[in-house]
Every structure is written in structure tokens, then in C-alpha cells.
Image (cartoon, rainbow, N blue to C red; front, side):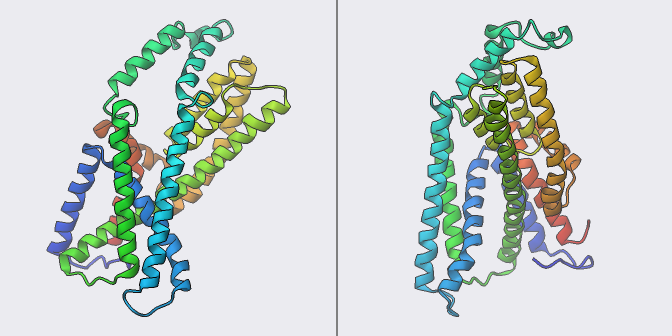
Length: 344
């Protein structure tokens, strides 16, 4: 989208579009529709990335082309199916005996209890007294955040339905845009402009974070599955930790803290030295990732890590855990709007 002139007057249609967009974004996080929005945007962007190759295969100067319509329609079906299968497979693995998060938490509780004899006293003051206390604290935390952790328990079906509907809607919009040329009036054109900026912000943040999480998971997997076994150290639940590293790594900054805590605690099952070695390795990797993050995410949305942290802190205070996930995308969108008006 071309940058607007700084002196360009703001029209009433743009103001109305901004107000409606702000209300929609608030509504999404307030009523926990973020999974549907993210799923729809993901499908929409994936179709847009692959559609140019289809356009080359089915060239036509007509606004609507039946062959292209079928090709893009099949593409939408394939993408939605693959995403659904990938999500179902990940959930099945994390609920299985081999990758159960519940088993991992129980193992961490047992490790902390067994490691009390080797940990310094100042650290023991901040740890649960035993495995039972750890489980009680974890249960209390889960109960207090039950409304935020909607992918767990009875809300899982509703969230899954939202995700599926979001993917279908995203696919339908991508299909329409790929084969039909619309001529919008003033307000509709202003609203489409806001949607385009939001979609582009999603693309910049999420795809960059996926690359960063994949790189982090790769180096973590090398450490857990190659380096430690070669040294004669075999940690339990390695596959689960690798899967968790990728999933939580999709959340900027905080995701790394979660995965690092899990790995260091599980490393205590071998010895304090192994735990310290794991911590040093992860710190070194994340120092490398800091520059990588600045290069990938920073270059995409022109934002520093401290900016994202402030945005995530404010959104978490306002909306809870769902705000942490939404913050980078919302912040990137706001900066895109300001940049489009040449204000920053």
C-alpha cells in the first residue's frame, strides 16, 4: 500500500473505518475470538503466497477465470486440511503417554523435590516444598486462569470450532480476492485498507516468529537429542520438550522463558551441572537469537524488543494471556497505520 502524504487530509470514511476496526479488534480479544482471527489470517496469507504460482499456470486477462477458481479452491481445501491435520496431530501427541504435558509437569514436580538436596538455600526459598505442593500450586494457577486457558477442558471444542470457521472464512476471502476484482466505494475502500494493513502486520509478525521459533527448536533439538546423548546424558520426555519449544516459541520473548524453564528443570534430573550446562547453552543460543530477532522481526515491523515487551505487558494487564498473543500483531498494525500516514 502506498504511503499517504503527511498533508493528506483525513476523510470521514477513514475515521469511520478506524473506529470500526478498533472496535472489532477489541471485540476479538474481549470475547476470545483471537484463535478464529489468527486461523483465518493464516489461511488467507498462505493462499496469497501460493496463488501467484497458480496465476502463472492459469494466465487470463478476464476478471474471473473458472480454471483459476478451481485451482485456488483446491489450494484452499488442501491448506485448511493440512493445518487441521497438523493441529490435530500436535494435540494428539501432547495428550499421548509419550508427549503428555501432564506427565511432563508431574516429572518436573518430582525432579524439583528430588533436587532439593543439591540446590542452594536461597533458591529453595522460591521453590515448592514438595511435589504435592507443586501440583497444588499448579492446580490453583490453572483454576484462577481457567477463563484464559480456553484450549483446555470443556472449552476445547468451542475453540476448535472457532479455528475451523476462521480457516474456512479466510479461505473463502482469499478465494474471492484471487478470482474477482472488486470496485469499492469510499467507506468500503477505507475499511479494506485497514484490513490489508492488519493482514500484512499478521504476515510480518507471525511468519517471522515462525522462522525464529523453527531455528530455536532446531538448535534446542540438537542439544537435547544429539549433544547430551553423545555425552552419555539422556533426559526424559525429549520429544515433548522439543514440541513445547516450538509451540511456545511462537510467542515472542516470553515463549523462550517458558521452554528454557522446562528444559533446565528437567536437566536437574541428571545433576546440577547438567542444569547449569543447559542454562548456559540456552543463554548462548538466545543471545544469537536476539540479533536474529532484531534482524527478522525488527526489520519486518521496525520494532525493538522493548517495544514488544511493553505492548505485551499492557495487553496482558488488560486481557490476560490472550493479550500476550495478540500484542505483537496489534502493535505491528498500529505502527503500520501510523507509518501509512507518515507520522513515524
